[in-house]
Image (cartoon, rainbow, N blue to C red; front, side, top):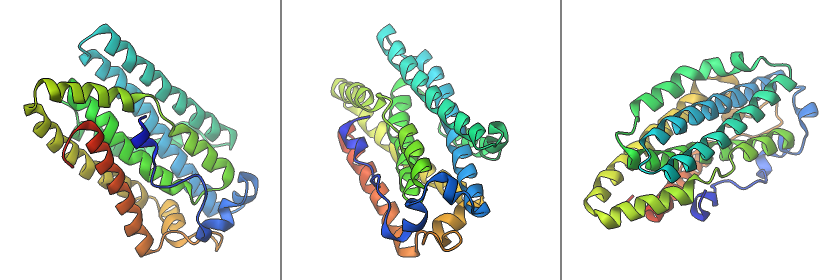
Amino acid sequence: MSTVENASPADDSAPAGAAGIASQDWATASASPQYRAAVVDLLGALAYGELAAFERLAEDAKLAPTLDDKAELAAMASAEFHHFERLRDRLAAIEVEPTAAMEPFAKGVDDFHRQTAPSDWLEGLVKAYVGDSIASDFYREVASHLDNDTRALVLGVLDDTGHGNFAVEKVRAAIEADPRCGGRLALWARRLMGEALSQAQRVVAERDALSTMLVGGVDGMAAGFDLAAVGEMFTRITKAHTKRMAALGLAA
């Protein structure tokens, strides 16, 4: 996405507290059944999220005002599907049935998209830029607690699909043409912020292995986030959101 968006809250290196697992490869780290279960949950959640993103972008393309815009969104949808394929193939490679891994997360993701269905083209662009980016920031933070093989995969599928610069250009042009739409879109983006953070928290809270890995650590190999670190994580995510809002020309 845009330069603002790629300034993610977590970098590719793992913090010292997670050095146990983060310095290992998958073959070594997955010897822990609890860690393996946490990674299966994470990949399942990400895979379904990417599949849903593909579906949503394909639907949003129908709202596009021009053929060029429609083609741009179609290309982004294709990139999301490629990300889904990478995650699906990784699950299969570690002998996990991909559909079974995704199933626990389908309802939550579908509910989120139902509750935040855009009413028009501009709301769809803001959702893809702001809402999806908050989820990506969260998963980048999670990636710091993963083995190096899984971390590389997760960060790879969170890569830019090109939507950021496109959304910024279109939204800023729309606000310049009609400044009144800026207030509406700012309110929409704030709603997306709350819903996206709630969704991320639910993903972790509802899966014991994943929450243990993040908060308590797994088998003594990773420290996980302590309460202070959780607060710092959400502060970083909020700051990144504020920068994205500024890039769009909206008040955070």
